[in-house]
Length: 333
Image (cartoon, rainbow, N blue to C red):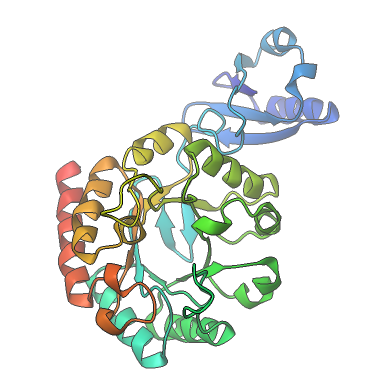
């Protein structure tokens, strides 16, 4: 339920109303816009008399939110959330590109990639230290050593780091990581999501292989229920009957999610199509659809990559793509 307050409501009136609602067992989320203030009520709102609430002089209207996701709902929070990652902002009018290898392989590899993607316009560096692989015999990542290499790259380049967490036991290793990624396979790992809700770190939450947008938003809700609203949603393709591409990139998810939620929405075309030559057109499509950012896999030697070389751009290809992205964004203004 949301209560839209009238313009001119005093700070004292708002504080008294919030105290009154909290005394009745509700958590109250305040969203202050340029022209109006909205109070979002979290709890069993069937117990509240909407007519009584609407009768208050300072209340303009009361609306019930029928969707199961409340905190992530745009009705609850009309203005776009902007996630600030050490000065790098995503959401609202802030567009960013996250780039780097699927997995960290060596100091030389990650440094060569980091410097080149940074020069081409990427604002954040991605790299996998822990890798969820379909086969137990595939490269699983460098683990804690990979985390250390990423943190060294942050010192050298100044780029905030994005890397994936696999389970709650690894949380201490992520203390200095800027953005914790929850991969598609862990989107409904609810115990992990609860733990991440207790942190205040930005969380990049990827849509699962066969999950609906509502399920993605409910996973975000788990994190937000713990008090962490620093969430970036990521569309990374879903599994369909199509076999020519690795997954099917759901471009329609971008405008739909932008309508449903205030959280920023980015797109990972690399995992969606799984074929390097299609990453650029899918990236441009995502930008045109209104995405708040892109997550691109880049490797300096894709043919010999230990993980997902087939979908990785070279640094040179990334630079060409980043320039086209810039031009598309300019054309949309």
